Image 1 (cartoon, rainbow, N blue to C red):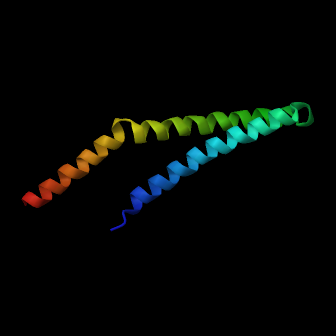
Image 2 (tube, rainbow, N blue to C red; image 1 turned 60 degrees about the vertical axis):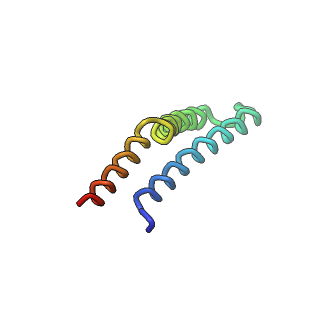
Length: 86
């Protein structure tokens, strides 16, 4: 059975990670092309967006590779064993 909550979390995590990577590539392209052709306000906006995506990227990594995911999985297993006992 598909658990839509987990599917949504994986999709959201993928969007955040891919957004971070796209931002890095975009910033490198602008940097290589020469920042003098781009307005400084646009560059500041891009850097601000990159910092925002970076914080989301860090949260996603912390969840999936930290203890939060393991704790959620543990609670799911405990819930299943309690249902089997009843």
